[in-house]
Length: 150
Length: 153
Image (cartoon, rainbow over all chains, first blue to last red; front, top):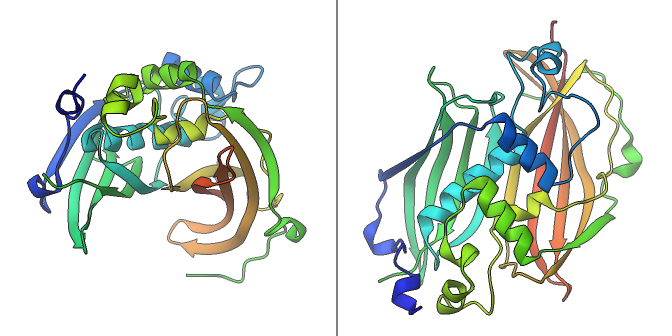
């Protein structure tokens, strides 16, 4: 594989500007939540609020909820997929404003809010959020990414 | 705004860093993670792409650090309200993690504080996690906040 092949999905600093938006969708299933809990060794014996609707209702939720760390992972992957192989995620800072629940269709949004060329260090700041069909945002955050120049 | 609300917690754990485990980030773990989350950046899925991109081996997606198998982090044992939720995370990436790296993690309770907003009083406990590779270099930091509050049921 050549470098140009490998960098085929690369995002460049020269090509982005404030106001640019990119989106994806995510509807986390119960099976995906269990897979995430398993890979991160967070499975617990018996039903819990992440796996069982009844347990979630006991704490005021409408159905089983998605772990915050899984939402952070999805938001992070959304950004790292977008930036491409030579991008570098510096940080992502998220708030869990309300629980995301199983099978809830979510729009995943990235909105560039600032671009900065600081002595050759080219970084992009973007808002990242999940939005459900009621316009609520279970996750809202800010990411900072380094992008290369062309 | 801050508030004078009364709550109890274990002050002795504040700022005390405790090792909570270590795990090798294998190529298999990276593949499982990418599959579960739908990650498709080629430096995480294809060693040849990672090499072409200037890395010395397959790169781990940064968020994989959130799935390391660890002991429980120290707790401030906050006594307030009747429920607790994960309210936010700040994840700072310092340098890439490559397949085969062994990541050691330490954690400390950074702070506990109360805030009162339009939905009532909440008590936040912030835990800081530091991730270091086998060379002793910090590869990432995370701050995770848990909110304790009273919920009508």
